[in-house]
Amino acid sequence: MPDSFGGFESFGFILLAGAIWALWSTVKIVPQGFNFTVENLGRYTRTLSPGLHILIPVIERVGHNINMMEQVIDIPSQDVITRDNAMVRVDGVAFFQILNAAKAAYEVDRLEHSMVNLTMTNIRTVMGSMDLDELLSNRDQINTRLLQVVDAATEAWGVKVTRIEIKDIAPPRDLIDSMARQMKAEREKRAQILESEGLRQAAILQAEGQKQAVVLEAEGRREAAFRDAEARERAAEAEAAATRMVSEAISGGNVQAINYFVANNYMKVLESLAKSPNQKIIMMPLEASSIIGSLGGIAQIAGETFGNTGSNPTGSTPRTPLRSGSVPPT
Image (cartoon, rainbow, N blue to C red; front, side):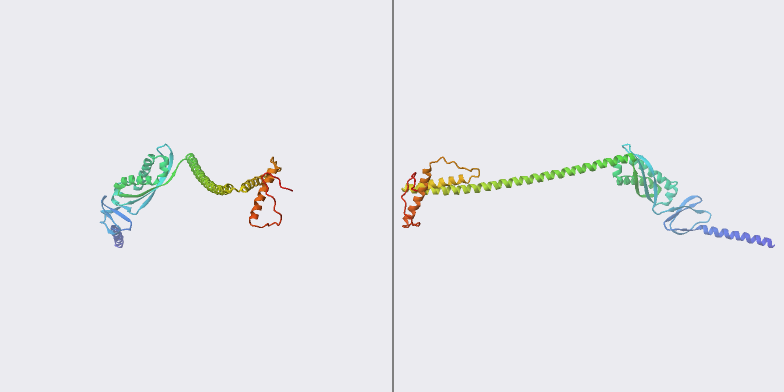
């Protein structure tokens, strides 16, 4: 009797534990950011959102736990041959978010693995249709094209691809060296062009300065010529006035005026000859009596001038007027 009672207690304990387990298995708490799919005898029936849920014991069970938050997957590096037959090594990252838990669970097997392979295939397709220079300079265009293609392909899986980024594009070492030499040559070419432009601008400015200097010099010469001509004109006017006065004096019968005029010009010529820097001895093939006569004419004119005033400033006896060409007494 006690043995049968002990066996009954063990059986009852097992039943109680089974009941508790069954009840607990029907209660499901879904955390935030996740969705659970529910299967009824192996067939998908509904999706559990975050919160507390109770399932039908034995009949219903949770099929898949789906992460509904945005996720990132690494795209492994791979070799890509461009349109101009250059081989580069490329890797990247992809960001995606599951929008439909049922499709992500039952429309594709191994979702992340499928997305990685799909992205790698499209990277080869997109980059293989571009030249190397275009590939290195248009990463934004590559990312946009990849995003459009991959997002359209994964829409049936209930996935939204939000971004695909190419992390690194690594050409071979010899190609990198060639690109470095090309870049150096291009920079040297730009430097030579800039230097040539500077020299050209300097030559233009120098020519402009010389042109302005020549113009200013010509204007200065013109102004000086105008002033010289004006001075010569005034000198000619004065000479003409003096000549006219002498002519009037001669026409009035004053012979001493012509003697004075001739003697004055004669003395100016002698003075200019004496001031010449390259003349040390002046040879005068002239008649001395003519020079002395001219000097005497000047003295006679001066004497008559003082005689007209009625006084002798020197206090000496007036001399006899000399004719032109005569020799005064010593």
